[in-house]
Length: 398
Image (tube, one colour):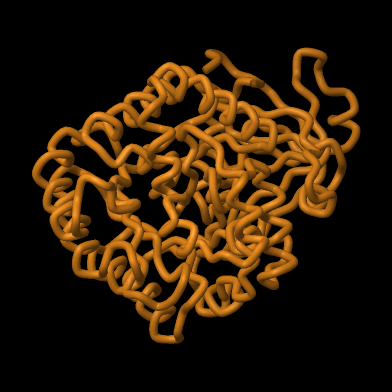
């Protein structure tokens, strides 16, 4: 981070404000010191035109995007599985045939930490080009003591070497590895052998609570055990049906419940009462060709702070184009563009328990993105392309 006072001038300034709404201003001066916004001042167009040559002139400025759900570190390639799905095989059928998460597990176990780091670092740079300044990264493709710790080591290196802020989620409860015969015995092993070694190396623990994977009971058992090691709970919930994920999230006071394609009114009320942030992942729904998207409109209308994540992963959402995820949310989940931007900035920050980013205000981190056109809507309107000119992280152009 740079020392001293930095000055940025913006033609247009867009920041999340009240729930789902944006604050927009023209001609703004942003003062940054030691990576933190110390003042935002509306100025005249004349002042903007005569700005000091030492100041940095920007077009449309929005907060840095926060991707609160990724599976960034893995080995192998599962592109052939897509052809199987297009031919009619389900996600579960492919998994039973040896594909899916276990296929990635085998490839990830075989790669060195160095190779995994190099691949993941390239992915982080790609995400940066789409305006992502903070991202969460999960383990979960090792599913053994050695491999899960290897993934934690890789993520720790990414934190030190990457431009973006990184938060770590431990997710050994992603699938049942071949070394175990039952989910209950595997959960017991994670609690006894893995969790003690994770202390201080991750902020969250996640579990895939779905039919054919981890039950509500096993999920709660594991997430409660994780709290003893400082791991806040997250839950993959209701992606393929109503199978107890929301109940697990509520019972463990999870910071977020993610996916949520199948929700009842009671589920929505329970999430609100427990202050669990719903994270919606429309890219996965799109790529799996599922007809039922998460009920964003119902969640927003109920007053919940909806977040959007990419769910970047090797099998069901292999894209790092986070603005494209926002376009999917607008088209398929009836979200306004104001709500989409809010959900990819402040909403996603809330899903990670962060209160120092996601909006542009005094005292916030100086993480912001310059768009190459006036009007933030272009970020989602030109779907599939990056309309980003510059990315600023901690007051530094990266």
